[in-house]
Length: 129
Image (cartoon, rainbow, N blue to C red; front, side, top):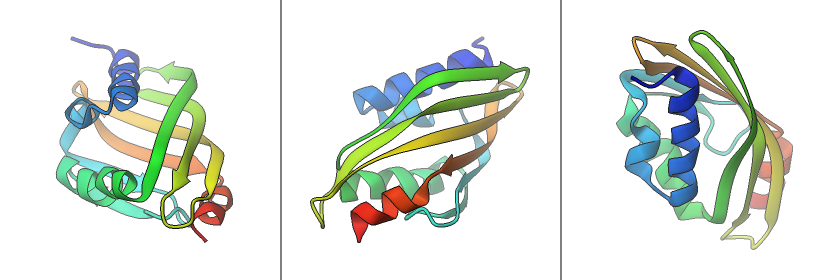
């Protein structure tokens, strides 16, 4: 069985390959996924299908070259935090953005039960305006 840290490393590796199934793999059936207020996809979504529909499908539809690249991880038991950089070009405006992020992942029984995003939403919203 994977450690929480390895599961999150695997999530970002799947993201880099465009492997949506691999990205959703560590999520619990009732995962609570929060995109922060001010972010274009803000809200709390429950379950992998809701995360896919309200976050990942929308990102894929709206952005060219969207990436979430982690650079540093902190792991403490069932909690993992990834620090990294978002980048991409918003299709409708042609504007590019680069914004730092922190993602907090909480595990229980080997799966992610809660995710919370922190980022500079102004930089992201500037690209879509």
